[in-house]
Amino acid sequence: MRPEAADLLYCLAAAFLPPPAELTGRAWCHALAVDLDELGAELELDAAAAVRALRQMAATPAADEPWLVEFSRLFLVPPVAVTLNTGIYLEGGLGGASAQMMTQCYAAAGFAPREDFHDLPDHVAIQLEFVAVLLERAAGGDADAEAMAAEFVDGFVRHWVEPLRLACERAADRNRAASVYASLAAFTRAALDALV
Image (cartoon, rainbow, N blue to C red):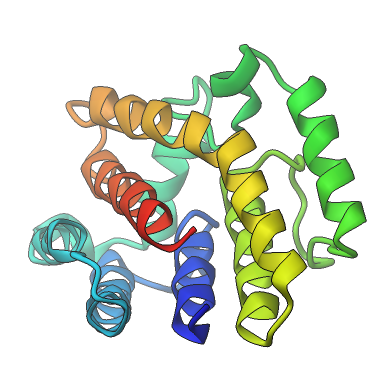
């Protein structure tokens, strides 16, 4: 396992977290496009569609606004257009069996969310960060970590990533950021298919 695989998953995890309040859409999109372009090339993954979506967003007048505003309109402000808590996609509700099983997986691997993370264990970002941690361990020679990453991705992530992409696509007519996140979800799926 190459260390760049973990870097890519850390990058994607961060993309699904609220951005710093002072960061404009242009700056956020540009930085992420550069990272995905570089990491995609290093890992021989096709990041072109995600990079293109980010660059298109960065070129719009709306990109001068704080990206947190766009993120909040899509994921946080009721009625929430798209949820980042994957229990909704996996079993139609929050705090169910899937979230409990994820918590058990985290504990078994000795993984705990950062202290500044204040959401449910089924949040997209925490799952991607967990897989990144496991891939990082695998790059260091831990064969059990690679197997655990594959099992977690097969058991959970592969089941919610396409519904997340579709939810973002459905919200695109009402929310400018939705098409960016749809592209990120599609790239996440492709990257995991290639790496895990």
